[in-house]
Length: 149
Image (cartoon, rainbow, N blue to C red; front, top):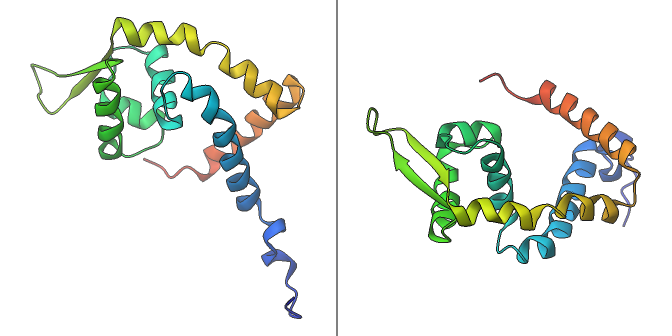
């Protein structure tokens, strides 16, 4: 039953947040079968992307890159360590700091993951220049929404 008190700014389909949320859900579902072949979850894949860029970083650094709390990274990183994709080592000069290092198996997984971005572009049904412009706009939006740290 429709509400007679129509307020267009409160309609679900008029919400930017819902467009972003629902697209994010579908994007993650699109990644799922691709990542299953690598035995990774989507959050693990994001962590591996950072490590493939910057091996030997700290938990704090990867947390900042992924815009997450360092404490929430611990279970994810422990799982990657159990899967022998990385090692976690405390610094000798400051035991509070944990460094992350890819194992040979973790580095080798990068080659298996190379096809994923192309699969995502294909699944989107959008030309690459349009996707790159959308990404640019989303990064701009994120930069305005990101709380100062």
